[in-house]
Image 1 (cartoon, one colour):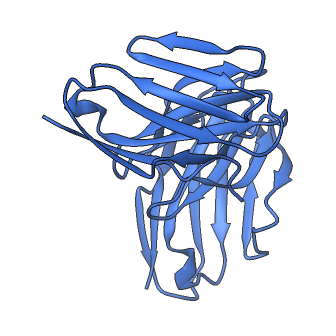
Image 2 (cartoon, helix red, strand yellow):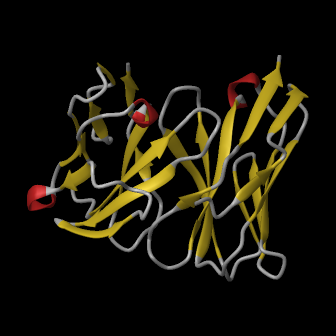
Length: 113
Length: 110
């Protein structure tokens, strides 16, 4: 299957710890997105890459969050000094060139205790 | 921030009935998309309608777009229990970044 892959699927961490999530997009998709979703809400945009360049970042994204996409392939999202309010589903999506339709992974569910 | 707002927030119908969900948005768009999300899973793209289109069909799905009213509707005909999911509209104002609403939770009773 060549869909978007996210790892891990679930992560439980203690408050104050750092966590890192990985996303492998569909190959040859040059755009990659990270979203956060809490219960009963729609996905909230976090950041966007076109190839290896991070083109946009939500103003809501605190400086504890950082994302990378080395070589324009997989991407990582790191959250430093996690807080209970970071508990959410973190979704990654990718899109092919010149199209907006986003193909989503299954998400990583983060629980901060 | 959420660009689109879906209405109703929740919808409960019997199998075989039609389900209609609406989406309103605030700013000019290039296109509008609808996605489905089953509980605890990722989103699945259903259909995209461009700003110069008024209606589009895909199987049992019918989407309309009224740019003068900044609104769209998604109609699912002859619903099935498997259509039970949350449905989201997402707008793109030209940045290639889909911006999602809060969604409509649809329950189809067998």
